[in-house]
Every structure is written in structure tokens, then in C-alpha cells.
Length: 192
Image (tube, rainbow, N blue to C red):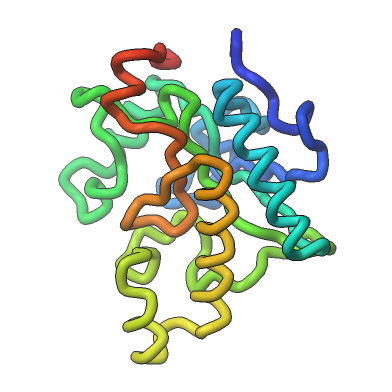
């Protein structure tokens, strides 16, 4: 991807497990022919900074990227799979310009431990349900639908990502945007 950076080239301690390069994802099929995480240089450097901050707080932890730059052609395939279903609220419609993954300015990320195992987050990455929303975590803990440790881990992830310049979204604890859609549309190019 011309002009974009391969995240592992900047920090090879960051784990990469591109979920759409295999069939174990919400669409049930491989969508990518590549398994590397590429991002716009600004977002790539911010992910590296978030990983640095995470390791400073918890030396055994590191980030794991599950999705990064997503070509608009893949976005269209995803949209075609979910339109008309309850999952369509979680996927940006290409007709409306897509989402920040399509600009290389969003990342799906979690935390793994020193063994490369995911730490507890309450759901797996890509669980498109209300259990993945960040605005009701305390309620989920009170109701026994999520552990307090999972909530604390989500808060840790948001902390290091926000400190590095990313913004969380309400419906997916793992998704972070580097900028706004308006800024992306005005100042960056979509990856076809």
C-alpha cells in the first residue's frame, strides 16, 4: 500500500493477527489476501506510541492488531454481507464514503500478554453485540454479563490509545479512530 507503513516495521513487538485474512470473523470468510497491518504514517506512529505506553504500564503486555487499512473493495464485500441484518449498524456503508479503516486511519486492536494470549475483554474482537459497547460496561459488570477485570482491561486499552491520539467508538471496544470522518474525507485519500 503505497505511502502507508507496515506497523511491524516500526515496532515488531506489536502482534498482528489480521482477522479478515482468515475465515474466523463475523462474515465467516477470508476477505483479505494479505496478513500484514498497514496504516497511514500518522496512525501507524500513534499505534507504536500506544504500545510503548502500554508496555510502560504493564511490561508483559503488548498490542495486537486485528484490522488496520481496509480497501474500499473489501468494505463493499462486508457491507453486501450485512446489509439488511442487525449487523449492518456495525459496518460503514461504502455508498456513504465508508469508514476510517478505508483511509488507513482506524485500527482494531486488543492486548495480549507475554505469551501472546489475549487478555480478558468481555467479548472477543469482532463480537458485534451490545456486550461490545463501551457505554454500558459498568451495567454489564453489575448484571454479571462481564467481569470487572474485563472492564478494567478495556479501560486500560482506551487509556493508552487515547493518550496516543486515538478516539474510541461507542459500539466496539476494540475499534479506534485516529481522526474524524470529516477530516479524513477532506484531507486524506480512500484506499481503493
